[in-house]
Image (cartoon, rainbow, N blue to C red; front, side, top):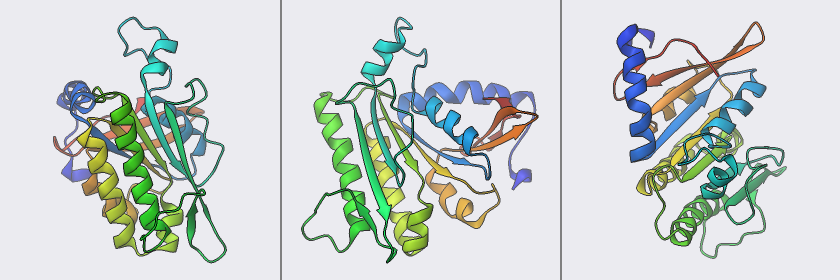
Amino acid sequence: MDGEYANGGETRAAFARTLPALKRDGSNVLVVGEDVTAVHEVACRELCGCGDSDGDDGDESAIDRSRYRVLVTDRADRPSNESAPSGTVRWIEYATEADGDPSVGDTQYAGCSDRLEALGIEIIETIDEFDADADGLAPAELRVCVDSPMPLFRAYDAERVFRLLHATTAAIEHVNGMGHVHLPLAPDHETVALLEPLFDAVVELRERAGKYEQRWRLRERRTRTEWLSL
């Protein structure tokens, strides 16, 4: 895999040129790295746009108010929405039951074949609802986090989970949003290879000497950055 991506000074320049386009046009990022839970947490906050300085005046509270966030998770301790007000953040939580069938809150969707289908519908309907509420979402105004689809892969066929993520990433790009999916796996894991075609970039995470680092692989440009401080 490494040989397919270019390195060097041109990579850093390509990365700098690509980031604004990812925000402007809508994008999805696959975040990978095993045994680095804390690094995933920090990367998630950045990708969710929590307190960043991309707004007009740098006012973090104003920036948070302008964000719409959808957080899809099988756990209830994700801190990414701490500073966001009610009404602009939607948690879609599912619990993996003993029979391996993840449930989606108390939401009921008549006609759904199972709860995986219901989960996909709830994600897309939430994005549509936010788009309507904003009277058309601005580029990068919507941030979507999926953390993590691994319980779904354990409960359902990989092809069905792939289709769910395909529909989710397409819905995000349709409104020029920014989505990311966490996979706590090594970059060369077969599940990473399966999902990579759905994403504009793959972000590898690691911790070295107490420092959190990231390395981006930009699929369209076939380039890869150096390890960068997170």
